[in-house]
Image (cartoon, rainbow, N blue to C red):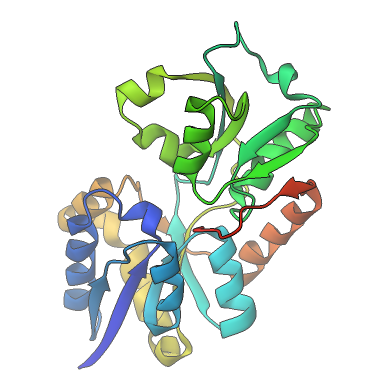
Length: 253
């Protein structure tokens, strides 16, 4: 039996990594290959070892890189999850609203494609910030609000929702996007190309049995659906929404 690594975007393993271990076991029992989940410490560790992954659950920008530069093959994506933005402000501002972001510098992580989802949403509302103060991580973005280094910020919705109640109480949520244009994806290496259909079938049929459904529920996924190379390449359209920014000396994401 062939053995392959399952690599998963660090944002999705920060809590309950055992869910992904169980997921890899399910795949190994269903597909004629063995998958071993390898947890990444952080994004630098994830990116350093990315090419060793036979099956990768990647964020939008890494999905594009894997397709463009390393010939990875997309096989599936969650049907109910997309990468979205939450707009936040410091509590020192009274009743902040989305229009207030016009002409303002916004703290965010420019290297993450989901930041462009936020900029697209603002553009659709005819709101143009003066620029992005790019931080190294989503936690650094939130801390910039807590430390009064920024009045406004955009954060990845999944990260925001994972904050505890105390942290959220120190932030003023203004709005969130419902764009649905980008998402995480499962991709396989060329080494697994001959098994692409078998892996795709395994993933997209998980919701049809009790064990698979339970595993997906633990990962907050309703079901997995087929995703194409063309669908992921459309993510590049968001590049037109980039703004001038102040970048950190070193980025973790």
